[in-house]
Every structure is written in structure tokens, then in C-alpha cells.
Image (cartoon, rainbow, N blue to C red; front, top):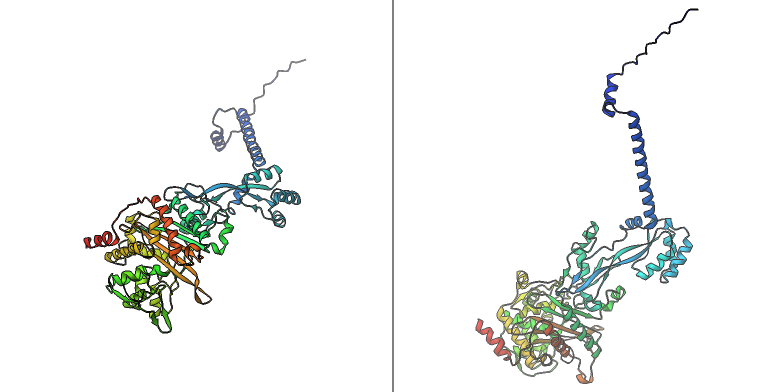
Length: 587
């Protein structure tokens, strides 16, 4: 048997790897790399990636479970426009209007499981909700619907405890007014979406704030406060005295303002009855309008200030010019009377201190119809007065201006202007002759002079200051002077009969008293108005301005003058020595 010799097989050679594959493999894995280890690393990395993804999903689900309203809030932002507004402060930094965060209740109808139960629970928690309206909103196909704006924190807690799916809360900016009705006609108010609808609030929106909100800016209260010219202390004092006067004289309404004659700043403005801007429903009462800017009235004898200034400035008269007041001034079938017949010739100064309608008519006629119209237009009485407050009214002037119109307008009848408009004109008569537009924002004297327009000569202004002080010494403003002794006031009264049934009524009047202080160096003008005051035993049956508006004005001055930084000065010379003599010395 022969032995078989084993044979050795040669290994089969692997086909050579193409150079392109070798290049790709080396680029992907490098050289001399353990591919098994590489595979394990890739599997581990994939596990970590999937674990992270599932972890994120779990966290998001937990967030939705804990704070499921977040996405609804984002969706609601296009509906919730109660964005932030800047604070409004008075001239001393006291807050007049500010924002606070307030919860509002909304629903996501698609997420509500039992709509009947939701309606029942919500109306039980908020009894003032309308059941039918709530049912309609939670049954809609919308993704978002308001249920009630601006609920209380206690109401929010009660509803939150109910645990109703699809019911949530959104924190909005709510406007609050710490001073209540004190400055309501200046500040105005906002609507439920925090948009200004009256007063300075509306002015803010029309001057860029609304555009910022629409662009998505000004979403937080980082805006600079708006500083007004109003002094809250003076505002409170003025309002308090007007409330007392309105009640005492049983007036239908009362209003007043205090203006800086050198800057045009309105330091205080009150119109009664007013409203609380924290309760917007009150603002809709038509009797609560701002009578000082929105209303137009025949201002009565306060207009004689402008009439006499016109004649003096035109060189048609001087303080000693005489006018015939012996008999009524006849014009066709009309006769112009004085309340107290003087029966003699009177000087220009007496026309003012006796408040003679006959004398004022003759003064205006001496200047002429066209010149009269031109003067009133020059001093801002013929056009609508524009201020920061959107509420304003167009003056009512005659369509055809005859000599009879000039006569009646000379003593404040036959033309109706906004009281603030009349104040602007009288400011120009006492501040050296400069017409300065009124403002409710802080303004310096330099800024005021830059926009001022000279309307009468300084000499004319000096003579008007003398006449107003003389009227406080010997005329119809004496009672106010006695009540505010030491502040050297000057003033002019006005009693205008109201038109009732197409005729002037002697029993229904609008009384006004305008005072300037101190007359040797005018700083402020005070206007007090009483609408339809009643006669009292102490007024001896009279309802004219000297018996009610003048004493009310005197009390206002006595209270606000110290707040305005004015010190009383006693034993001062009379008007002819302190005002006229000083005026002549400077000429």
C-alpha cells in the first residue's frame, strides 16, 4: 500500500481593489482603522441622537401639560392689542396715567371637551357674563376667542381651580388713572385695547404711538414718560373750589383754567361735571364734555378787553377818550342798553370799569367793521384753536358782518368761541402783546417766544394791564381783590345771556370772570365760568357775574397763588402809580 503525500493548496488571490474605491474608503475611514469599532461607534451615536430627540419631545409635552396656554398666548397677540403706553406725569413728576398688568380670560374652542359644562362653570364664576354670548364663543370654530377682558386676580384664581381644558388667561396692559377725575378732561382715556380715544391719550396715538404698536415695538413700558404742563396740586385746588361754587349757586355746570401768560402752558383745567377715566362709561354722558375746548360760548363782557385793546392799538382812542352813554345806542329797530344807565359821557377807562355796552359799541364803531374783523382774526378768535387735545370746536361767527354785528361782538355777543381761545387772546393783551398758542406740555419761556407773534404794541398791553387792575380797585372785580389780598390782581367780568327759544334769556346766563396776577408783572391768568347760576338771598336776587363768578374766582386765587410760587405783597401803590407810571418811564 503506497503512502499518499499531502499536497499544499495555494490561496486564491483576491482581486485587486480599484483605486477609486481605495480613495473613497481612505477619505471616509482613514487608513488602518478597525471598521468593527467604527461601526459600534456609529450605532452608539445613533442611539444618543434618537435619545436626545425623544427627550426633547418628552420635555415639550411636559411643558404643554404644565403651561398649555403659551402657544395660545402667542396666537392671541394679533388679537390682543392692549400694548404698553408711556406714563403720563404732571409738571412735578406726579403720575397721572400708568399701565398695570391685568389678566384677561380667553377660550380655545377646539380644545374644550364639554362645552355645556364649560359655559355653566364660567357663568357661575363670573355672573356678569352673558350665557348666550359665552356659549356662542366657546362653540365657534375659531382657535381663539375672548371671554372677558380685565378680570380680577381673585376671579382668575377661581376659574383656574375649575380646571377647564381650553380656558386660559392672558396678561394685558391695563391703563389706570391714580388721580381719578381730577385731570380727566386733560388726560382723556383709552378703550379696552389700551388705545387712546380722547385727550392726551388720543394725542399720543396720533403722534406715533399707534404706529410703534402696529410695528411690534413699544411692547413694554420702557418709553420715556410724557411730561404735562399741568400741576396736580393746583388742579385739585381749582376743582375743589369749582365744586363748591357749582353747589352753592346751583349752577348747571362750572369750569375753569389757569394759564401761564408768558409760556401759554395750561397749569390747570377743570370742567364740571367731569368723569372718572377708570370708569369709561361715564365719559359717554353728553353733559360731561370739556366745556373749555369742545364748547363754544358767547363770552360776554370779557370780550371788552379785546375791543378796547383794538382801539388803543389802532390809535383811535386813549384812556381819556370820551363816549356818549347818555342814552341807548340805537341801530335800526335794535337798541343797546347798559345794565346800569350812567346818563352821561364816559371815558374809555370808565367803559371798562362800568362794563358799558353802549361805550364798547361806540369804541368798536370808531375802528370800523373790517378792522374789527381783522383784529379778532389776528388775536386768534376767528379760527379753530388747535392744541394737543383733539377735542376742539370751530368758532361761530356771523356769515354777514354788519355794523350791528360789530356793536354786539364788542361786548361779547354774536360770536361764540372756545373759552381757552378767549384766554389765549387775553394773555396776549397783558404779556406785552404776544400771541402764544396754548399747550398742555411743558414749555420754557424761550420756546414760547420762538413761536410767539406780536399782535399789539407793548404800550397797548401796559394800558390794558392798568385797566384790569383799575377794575379790581374800583370796578366789578373788587370782591375778588378783597378775597385775594396781596396778589395785586386785575380782572374783567362777563355775563352773557343764553339763547333760549331763539331769544336771549335774562334768567339763564353764562357767567365768567377772568383774572390776571400780579398785574405789575403778569404771570398767570385764571378763568372761572358758571353756567346758569341761581339767585341767592346773599346775592339780593342778582345772577350777574359779580355776585358769583367773581367771589368764586377770588377763592381760587387765594388757594392757588401760593402753590404757583407767588408771595403776597401788601401796601402796593395804585394802578396809575405802579403800572402807568412804570410804563411811561420805560418809553
